[in-house]
Image (cartoon, rainbow, N blue to C red; front, side):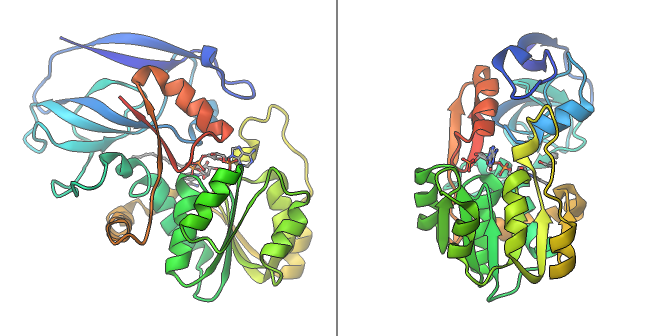
Length: 329
Ligand SMILES: NC(=O)C1=CN([C@@H]2O[C@H](COP(=O)(O)OP(=O)(O)OC[C@H]3O[C@@H](n4cnc5c(N)ncnc54)[C@H](OP(=O)(O)O)[C@@H]3O)[C@@H](O)[C@H]2O)C=CC1
Ligand SMILES: CCCCCCCCC/C=C/C=O
């Protein structure tokens, strides 16, 4: 008999999530039936979407949503061998039973040199978000100028590096001087700390006096309201996330987008990465290749211990992560 530890949403978040909103519980797992497998989580992901999605899709008492890299410890399913690793979407659980549906096997040829946690970050959902958001939504072209916020995070750091690979000038902003130094190190042309600049408007103008062709927006709110005025005519805005609004109890008010949208004839498109699920393999292959070639660098903020899932999640929402926030069991 295996005892799984699980994190439950005890109370819906009001404003910023707090440790007391979560409960750690134990569940006895039954023995396997034919076709089933037992998995143990090795790395778990904490992501911004968990904040708005928990509000929309979860009830109090539900196990927290999320993905993990898990190792198969027992299998009664011929398609899955013991010892193989998968990406699963099984929530915040230390162990779980699956019938194999929806599991994504990591290639047995996963490079020794790379941590398997990258399948939750640069070579996983956040990397794919950068890939499809930039190539399919922004439709960036060589020679253009790309702006990205939350640039030192899981999605943003890949956006900037892919835009460089694509021959663009890249401007990024992030919430600490260390993050800004990291952005310069990984090849951003311009980077600034949005928390310490005296004027966002001036910082955006200084970084690209001619404006921006593409804006990959991870943040929303006030930053986006200012950035939209710096778009070039016919610019494209990929609305990827709005993390500055996820913890608001009272919705923020405008300024509104219509006037700059009209006069600059902008294209603004919201997207969810799962739109390209049928091209997941293509994206992962490309990202893995660039990582192995050293063209895309990665950093992970690893929190040790399943018991620290809430702390890692809350820390990521506060901006404590450089690169992808990961929990190592
Ligand atoms: N549409 C889609 O399919 C997907 C969308 N997303 C979205 O992309 C965005 C980035 O996700 P991800 O890369 O995983 O997360 P990150 O790794 O970037 O972590 C979140 C970061 O957001 C920044 N942040 C937090 N609060 C604020 C704020 N009020 N203003 C500005 N920045 C803030 C912090 O960095 P800092 O120190 O710089 O403030 C923090 O480190 C999120 O909005 C997420 O919801 C992610 C995946 C898929
Ligand atoms: C098999 C992985 C399923 C995870 C789906 C995650 C979708 C994230 C969309 C994010 C939106 C905003 O943050």
